[in-house]
Image (cartoon, rainbow, N blue to C red; front, top):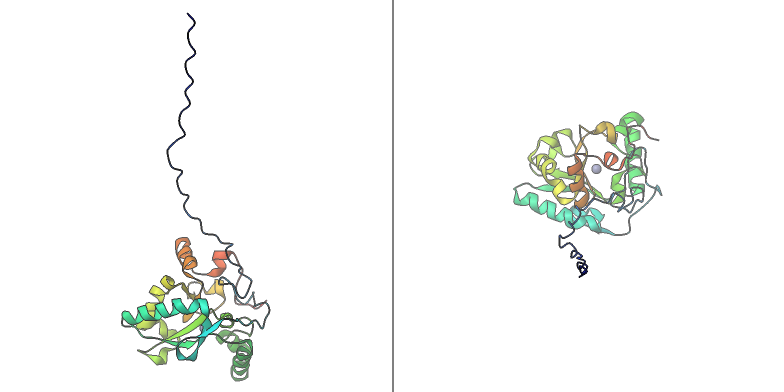
Length: 222
Ligand SMILES: [Zn+2]
């Protein structure tokens, strides 16, 4: 008697679920050259284009200063969180127009001459403040340290160094990264980039947009 062919056996499809891939950060999600992009890289090699760019969604926050609408909520959360920790941060500067930056820089030139003015202030068209994504904060405990290197040693300056990334902000210019950014340390100048990017940069262990996106920088204007 012929042996009946053994019924072929097809294993059922594997029930092992496909593992969800670890979400990878999409570095191309936003432009680094469009001035309206949250990830725009502005430095002495990369002016805004157009040089007289102005955002169209500015909102007024505290002290009559303005920022882009997408910055305002994180800014409010950050100032509230600092207040909860007993730290009073004051809004010193937000959006600055091309024309206003021209005026500031012109005054600096007249008073200090080109070399020192260049160290204190950005040329018009090269300031992060013109994007509406940057703020300068001060502290209530020692107002004399506002815009001064001693701000870094105040309770407000220390709170900023420790916490602002949680709210999507970077301390853009630090002592450690000044060769990359081309600016002297400014413990009070914060640049909003959004929480996903600050988290990604923390994972990478980098503090500059230039290193994150492989964009050149430095202290010489190009
Ligand atoms: Zn600033």
